[in-house]
Image (cartoon, rainbow, N blue to C red; front, side, top):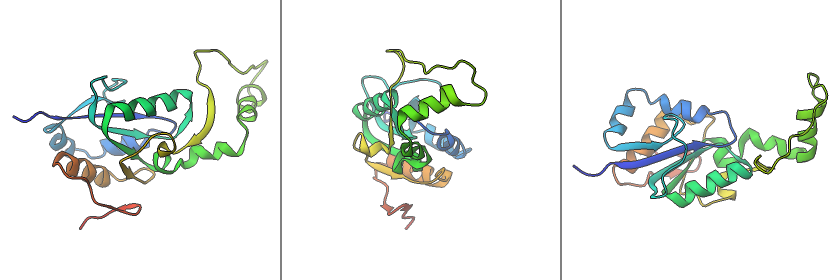
Length: 180
């Protein structure tokens, strides 16, 4: 029996809708699991791909702080193929709307000026992530495959993973999969 392909995924700044779309593969996920191991993913609650690496890494969401940047860099280092899943990962998505406001202004609004805040203060500690402008993943690390959509369809995700499991790079055309 051939070794199973190792897949890891994580989400950065976003809504987790892309992982929900992945779960919308429904019973077809059994076909994938016959050939692949989900080694680290929010779906299984395992946090990081092992230092030995994985065949396929999948990231959803934008990079928007020092922690998400670290996660993106680590996933790239540990993945033979990296997939940007969904509009936030591919383009920066709705998360980049925050870029129109300086990070200090966003923090002040969130922690001090909100209507429900009393005696608020902006949390600052060396263990807390440092806010950055939101960016698409390929503005931080190289990406091999892009699957746009908000969220991408379960069919698009299944197609890409099925092609990879068959040893083929999926044929993509522009923003859409080429189903021919």
